[in-house]
Image (tube, rainbow, N blue to C red):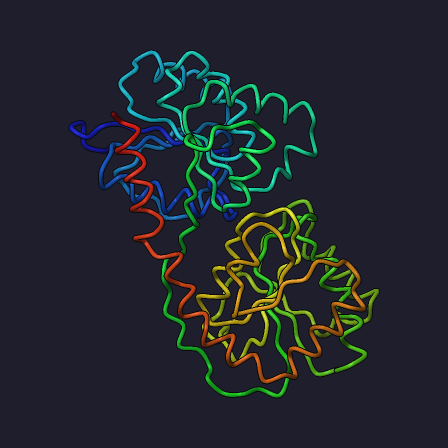
Amino acid sequence: MASVNKKKIIICINNLSTGGSEKQVSYIANFFSEYYSVKLFLLEKKKINYKISKNIEIIQSKYFLAVVFQYILELIKNKFTLIFFFLPKSYLVFGILSLFVNKRKKIMFRRSLNYYQNKNYVLKKIEIFLHNFTGHFIANSFAARNELIKFEKIKANSTDVVYNFIEPVSFSGQKKIVKSKNFLCTANFYKYKNHKLILETLYYFNKYEKNWRLFLVGNNKDSSRNDLFNIAKKLKISKNINFTNKLKKEFVFPYIKLGLLFSKSESLPNSIIEYIQKKIPTFACDTGDIKKISNNCGIVYKMDNPKILAKKIFEIINSNKLKTFSKNTNHKMKLFSKKNTLLKLIKICKKLEN
């Protein structure tokens, strides 16, 4: 249990199963626990797949109403300093329950480019309604912040941008040149991540070059390994597809030539940061802040034509630019340092406490 002498904050999220936002919450909660007494309210009872500090109290139950009841009790006590909401579903439930809490105590995190909101008109309208009762908004990209200001009428001085943070990992890797052209995609198997387009693109790439492999790192979501394997099988490239549960130490440049991400809805995917961390040049859709981040260390595209994308990949993978791109990743990692992310969050909290 956290120290009773620390000011208390509440963090609300659907679950801590798997995902980019879930990983970020684990980092943030653990870091906050050094300064605050932290309570994590989880809307769903799922296995927690991230390491959480023993100082953090976790409230979850297989009974939805049990979590709601405990959350209401926490609000009645009114001894907390700040409440953080992550992801639309959590914001919808806990945000409505918190309507009568002083808006200055509530902070909403926006981590996508209105993907969930645009899929559901009602949800979007409820979110915008809840914004009126929320005091501050933190986006993980300038693109997401701009959407909040332009389309959801949030005042600029009520917003901040805090980039994602990835715990540094030592990847010694295989520093030898391999004959095959290896690609990497680290993204859970959601349809919006556009794995299908990656496979279609590599089908056409296969016409240029046969000796390649794609490593897919992710968990089953609204798509699955079987779904993707069946697509690859129909395209007759299944022998080139490798599924793995975790990143391997050899997944660094030059063993991996390109990190691929074809998602159109994310403002700042963890995948891009992971590629940069491993010195892997990126090839990704021009969405959110990806172009800004990938500048000088990767290529961004705007079209959906797999034939054109395959040709671009073939050209870049056989150019002399990859080594330069890989070297340039060193400068990018400064954007995702602890100083630029977690410490900035603490600074925001201290400001909002007053």
